[in-house]
Length: 349
Image 1 (tube, rainbow, N blue to C red):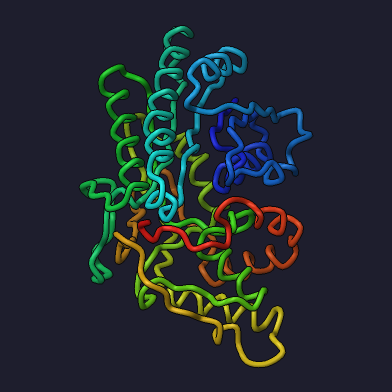
Image 2 (tube, rainbow, N blue to C red):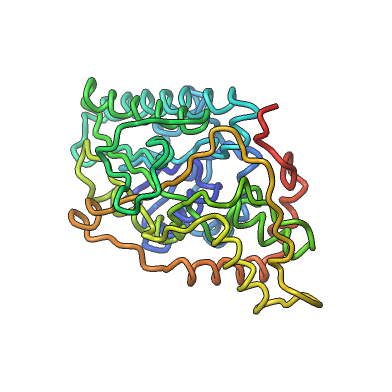
């Protein structure tokens, strides 16, 4: 199977690329190499004869047409997106242009290619999205997102992803383009760009800086280890039913405060401070606008139809993640100079 993966130098995309090549699939990585991308993320497969890289922006339709014609993929996995909620609050334009217009370009380029190839039955476009499109959940643990949950995005990022989901479904219904969709919970793990919560906490702790937690830390997220997610995505791309969507969750709900405390406990064990605990550095900061209270996914459909469940518990995944950051200082040090990293974003300025 030949895969065309957009955003393959990003966090989730690179996990997909690494796993796909390891499983013997040919992969074409299409990435614009914006601030959050890093080719070091795919360095372990870069020399493989199964791997090819195309630097291109999904907003560039001509480039996409050329890439499709040159590489002739069997499956498209569309992960390229602007993804940081805080950045979407401060600068929503990039999110509209990339996540909506870029997805439109991908759909049109894929449709042209599919038609030109005689509408091959095995072709499909897998659009990878987020559970944030569903809005916020109450504290009741019995209430979870499913594939049938109504959309209710609350910030520019989630609104742009909701729009892209709707476009993908419309192209499937209107033009017959074979599409599948997935919506995932919060990812974490190796190569996580150091502007998101878990890497920020790890790196601030090591630097002796405050560990910022929005509000009172009661916001709850369902955490999905990125390598588990990559496994699920390849399964959906190859065996998911055309026209179907799949909610992919980690089955690991945790409040932000509990998460930070768990990271501090692991760091206390792995690299103890001279005195006290890393938890002493916790600092509560003003909440960001439109901060959803709780996300949680019910992954019953992907479990029942495709036989997938997450294999990594949150405690195991956090320990692996901390160990990876401790062992890969060269990777994250090089990224800390990039725009906005280490600076408070999303304050609604």
